[in-house]
Length: 77
Image (cartoon, rainbow, N blue to C red; front, top):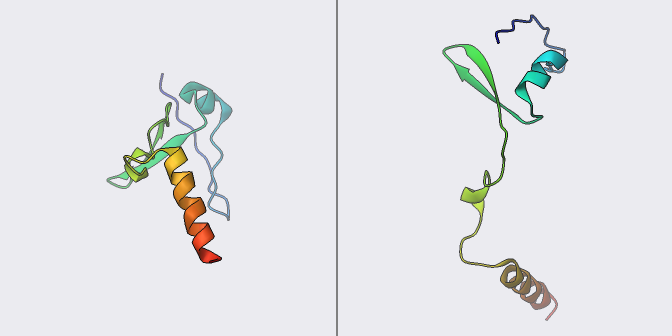
């Protein structure tokens, strides 16, 4: 399906994506790309793992919590 809509950028730099297009995308998370002076909007359906490159490897949540408590305790010793 091809849809073309003209919109306006608000004074705050915001653009409203028409409901018909939002429904077509099927998500509320999108990615903006600029290629050759053309703005492209792509739906992002699954964000699971999108922060994995920032995650610490090899440390469980429980270990991280214990380290945090120990560091906090050192502050008051």
